[in-house]
Image (cartoon, rainbow, N blue to C red):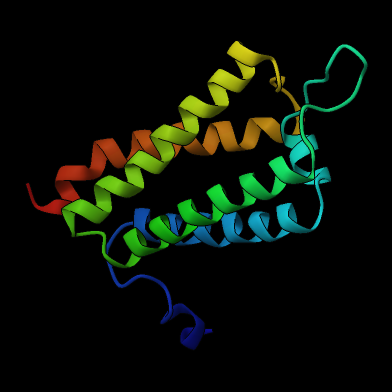
Length: 141
């Protein structure tokens, strides 16, 4: 067990570990999005007038690519949490995700505040808030 723990980011606090965890989960979601559009159709759970989902195989792969890019940035931040540019890029990934999910929900109606959609909304808003409130502590400002 100790050997596994040695792979975690070597910084105090839970934020770097959280970023690593969120990165691994996001990478797994990316793989899932590449192989099946069912994940994104459950995430973007709103339906068109004919009852069909807003998503298709192409939009699922695009979502997978976007999510994997975010995972790479967040993973980099987990292991470079004291580097301002990397820290800020990771915070931006959560801000962009939050705006995206809120706009899809309230603007386009492609998602409803239920089911699988709630978790990424909570992760994006909670993580962004956490990163903004801890920025000075990790960057020594």
